[in-house]
Image (cartoon, rainbow over all chains, first blue to last red; front, side, top):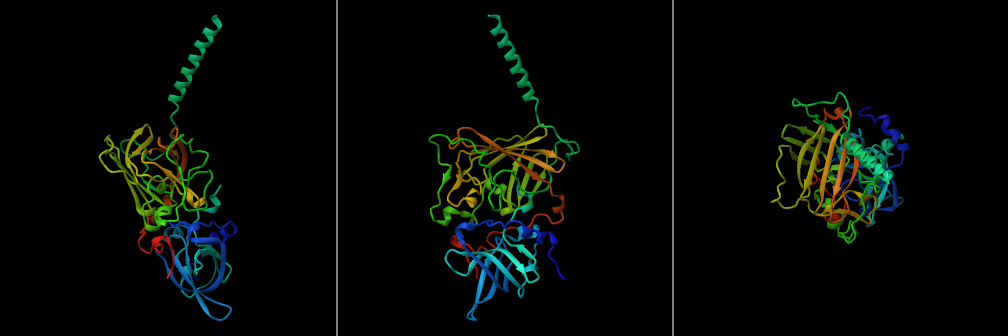
Length: 133
Length: 257
């Protein structure tokens, strides 16, 4: 398997997910009362500063398709945590848990990404949660 | 009448002894730290950002612990500032404006330090913040306009590097507003910061940051952070952070597509 996700990252799922991100204020953009959890296919990945954005085609109940855009951390912070762009390659089926934009659009702050095999990573910023006091 | 005189004499002697002890109580330098050719502690290397053990926001930067922050000066400039709804005011970094010092120093990114006899250079991965600190005894450049990162000069006190920075713009002190979107913590244009950097142990720096802001606080106050050396990050080195590359928050409204 190419670039497998390290077990240590999988284990961080057991720790509370941090909510906020660098650069822009999470609370000002995304509604903490509007949790979203969608499953779909990654259609595009922008692995760029200051934040990654990844786009997911999600099939609605009526059969129509919605393309969600999720913002994550900076590539630097993710890479220092061992998360590389391969994990969000277009075509990958993922479940994203996050928070919807305040304006109700299909933009969101993507917090946790779960893959089909059950492994998960956080795409938001985190100090190493295990080091948090 | 003799007893009070003896007591006073003894008290002065005790105070003198305590003062002498305090004066000589410079931090012990751990054995085996790296040193430059001229014998100064060598901080050249890659590090994590300053971390504290106090109350922190769930965000991407260290913030000052509430218990460390000094008393507000009665009638002073406001320390807390409410959001106005204008993103240019509420989060200027949405427009790729600089974090400034000390806020940017506390961002959760790598730091690389280069050191010579006459300069201490610190490059922070976040916003590629660079601080060039002269160590050659020069004075502050008071003719300059106030800036986001101020004007630093440094000197050695034993094995401790001391950096004094002045001439700041009024700007956000730290990322407190990520934790509490209802208020920012500001510093004034009278801010003077003093950093004391020394090796705490062979793998960790002590980073004592003093905030002297007489327009806001009654007295200077300090907080000690630790900075962990990360020689394992040397092969990768610093990575690029170019805020304008794909900033999808122009106008302060973040939107994909």
